[in-house]
Length: 458
Ligand SMILES: *Cc1c(COP(=O)(O)O)cnc(C)c1O
Image 1 (tube, rainbow, N blue to C red):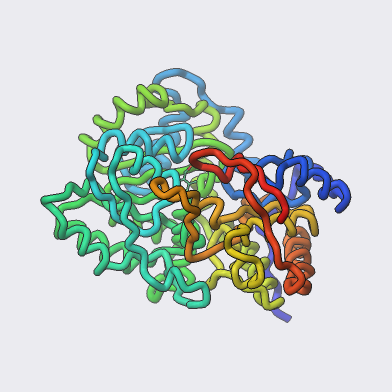
Image 2: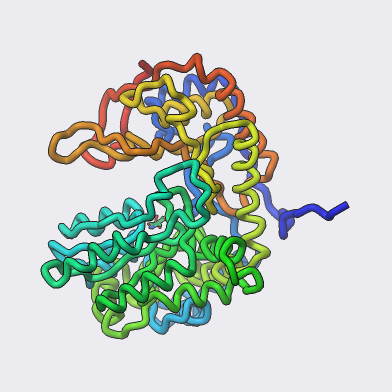
């Protein structure tokens, strides 16, 4: 028989987790005002809220922690990381930051001005936030396939070149400081961008003289999809693919909490020395001196090791196959999900799951709460709560898609845990027709309400 796939690690240290009872969860979620962000982590059995900074480090990363250099200026850990970034991404200049949004804040302080347009595929919410905060506009040029959850198109993160060119043509009336491509595209469901598309975006960008920045949180997962699904890349290593991907970019922002495989950290890297010089000033103001930028030396050391580990098939096969293991089970149970399954999370299509729950009653949040009650699993709503109200009319904005996102932390749970998640969802799916009501808002903040909102059962 064929030898099956197995994880490329064994476990050296474990963290006990508590399996609560339904009675406890009923009480806790009411005390949390039906907001999963308000739960204590001990009240959660399997935590799929996010894959950001929640993964396990390797023994080699922990060893690197012990040899970190905490010098304020010029630490060996900084140079270790700088050399690693240069060899993986090909960028000569780099600035550490304390996480991804800090990288955006620093780089956009140097680049983005009031009235600017910043096109790309679906911008991540902090990216959009940092653009809009500067009174500039993020323009979504994602391909239409991304919005059809049943389309099996393999590269739903791709930029629609015609939509992009429409925006680029608005120059010189409008200033376009950069195109931002998010790899993989978190907002459209962890969906990859093809090499072909990256290359074409760069060609178009060059034609109009606009630089290209990659929002790179899950760059290695993106490379894996290119290797697996794009013609001509099956024989290439992840490192070769990453290297080609970044040859079509002028700069990158990174949340190291994702494909850096560390618990905190971020960075900016770029080709151009003048961008580096401009950004350095903001880095010093907002983050710290250019050789640590909000990171401890030990964390830069662990990040350097993490970047080398994630850019291998050993790591990525294990990582993404686990996400697909969960996704395939849900598909087998007939549960509606975003197709194809992305790199870091499974997105359950809540509107299709609960057709009887009115959209005014927060369909995806309702599913998230019921899954917690059923199995102690914490996912996150990506739907109407997150979409917030229209700033002018104050009406709820109802997005095209309402998702329950189940994000899988790296190297953290076993496939038995995935079985628990799948069984929990299956039990709910079996009684879906009985669920006809959702939640209503008792209290909410004026912006970013999903973190603190208080809800009642209808
Ligand atoms: C997480 C993330 C960010 C922001 O990074 P933080 O480390 O959470 O500040 C930006 N872009 C993308 C695509 C992300 O996934």
